[in-house]
Amino acid sequence: MSGAGKVYLIGAGPGDPGLLTLRGKAIIEKADVVVYDRLVSPAILGFCNPNAKMVDVGKMPTHHKVKQSEINKLLVQFAVEMPGATIARLKGGDPFVFGRGGEEALELVSAGIEFEVVPGITSAISVPAYAGIPVSHRGIATSFHIITGHERAESNGELSLDFEALAKCPGTLIFLMGIANMDFIARRLMECGKDPKTPLAFIEKGTTPYQRTVMATLETAGETIARENVTAPAITIMGGVVELGKTLAWKKNLPLSGKRLVVTRAAKQSSGITAKLTAFGAEVIETPMIETRTLECPMVVSHSERSAAESKDLDLRGLVPSMDSIGTKCLQSDRIQVVFEDLKNFDLLAFTSVNGVESFFKQLMAAGLDVRVLAGKKIACVGKITEKTLLERGIRCDYVPEVHTGAGLGKLLRSVVDANGVVLSERSESKDLLEESRILLLQGNLADDTLVEMLPQATRWVVYETLPVKELPEWKREAVASADAVVFASSSAVDNFVKALPGSDMAPESAAMPRFAFCIGPMTEATARKNGFETVSSDETTVDSLVKKIAEYYAR
Image (tube, rainbow, N blue to C red; front, side, top):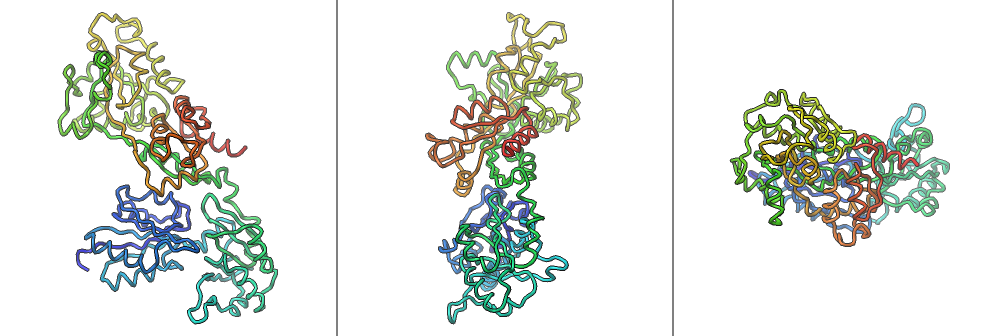
């Protein structure tokens, strides 16, 4: 159909977001609509375009939230009503392995809608692998067979399986969606001659933090399911290869296996900690609670401006306009015009965050300048992460405090002697403080007053603004509620996290969020405790130190 949207039938894999294909990820990152099933991991939903229309059509084992026929029509409807749009149909596993993707594709063909299939990693192979069970193994199984465990024949309502053929099959048998019928399946296989001692394993919620493997034999299948309360989603694997799982199981040995952690860092900063936590076996739900936007150009908040604002009980954040109010030109206050020409007035530049570094250099490049304007100037930063970011730009820091806080940086800079040999803390306050200032602070609009109070001679340039995330989508709230802990990297993230969830006046006592938090630095930890969280803080204000602390905590 000319001009209609295009539908992509995408396999999301078994659950682990690392098993989503690159092609699938690229499509959902730009999709205008995402139609997803219940088995799609919330970590994968986190990759979706934040502006996409999210449609949950998830089906439960005993209740179809949206009937398949309705889903088929829904895909056609979106394509027709949204010309040129990208519609992602995100399905657990592979769309063509008992995923009814063929039915959806036929509906699209009938309506003349263009579509593409993006294969996914099927749970039939990947879930046993995560349990240490190879589906084939030399000398044990030279074939494997994937069978649906719940499809019934239309004529008599019985399972449409050839039990005699399956009982004689020497290869590995893998049943998908068959837990509810497994007692019957096991008895029929034994009636048809399959050895009652055949090893089998039930693997629940495979590749997710909640993966569980329960071993049994064909003759004990039913009683084991009842005794161990095995529930869907789960697969059943039968054959000699199951025994290898007792030796080759690897996922359960990872230090964070079975843990779901919510990471609240800004999206562009979360990839590092997410990768490290994932490597240790955790499922990470990236839930940025703040977003930062580089201002068109720096805005100044000097000591004199602060004093004037405070005397009038003004909100200092009001001195920093939003991007919408800035337009294409630099605004200027009544006192100070902020232009990069003013850099010549400063001997030392102090960066208090990675965002400050990135935003400053974006503005510098936009002004047609580069790092040469910093020649001869001293550079200070608050901690190792900011120091590393500067080093990546070819700039070494002259001053990094041992205590990675604003107070630590302020204490260090107070001890620095300026070009005239006068200790900053002893400078005369009778002169015009702005003209006298030789220190420039590069910060965001919500930075606290610690450095300004410790260094009253300094000038503060606001190079970026921080905006809170006001609301979380339903699927993310559900994922957060079931998490084991939250990871906080800033006080503002703590405050915004509590405000963004339902029942925030009762949080974290409410079921809307975990009660436990891992924090970077003492200030973040203090804010988390003030909001009622039990906390553990990293020894240093670095991602590596935080990840190490998380791993050590769960290894106890």
